[in-house]
Image 1 (cartoon, helix red, strand yellow):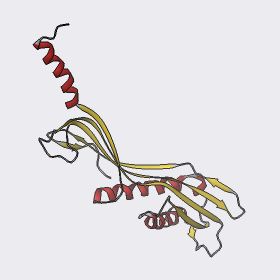
Image 2 (cartoon, one colour):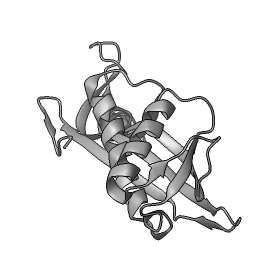
Image 3 (cartoon, helix red, strand yellow):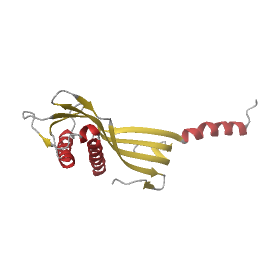
Image 4 (cartoon, one colour):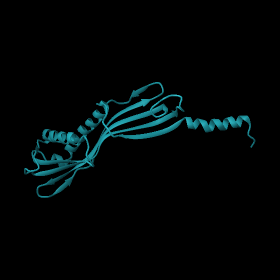
Length: 194
């Protein structure tokens, strides 16, 4: 096949255009709770988690009982104290349980294990690289992208009766979404934080 000027232009166009239009997905887990939106996403997902956990049969059976409440996370987490106090208050309001100090007697021990408390962000769509022409945070311009920012709380509880019998709840996942559609001209929200 002879390379003509037309074929060379065609080859360059076919090789260059796909590098401009790049379909991508990036995912980032934010290590901090900077900003009101991140804080609201996490606290609302924690509220939703606790309400769903309180509806689990193993927890709703504690109506009017005295319990010890223990909260665990993989490592020290800035929201552990907040989550513990919120769990105590919600269980007292929902099921009229009495939270007992560890040194006082209780009918049940409730151990809540968090798998996740935090935010998660993800971007999916078509972007073009700026090639140094424009300054953007990630060096690209969104042609059409879905920016997802979620508050996530996940975990379960193990309820131990004073006779030693143990029951485990189902895994509970609470997700609060804040999603945007991004284009080069305008960004608009798909949903709002409740």
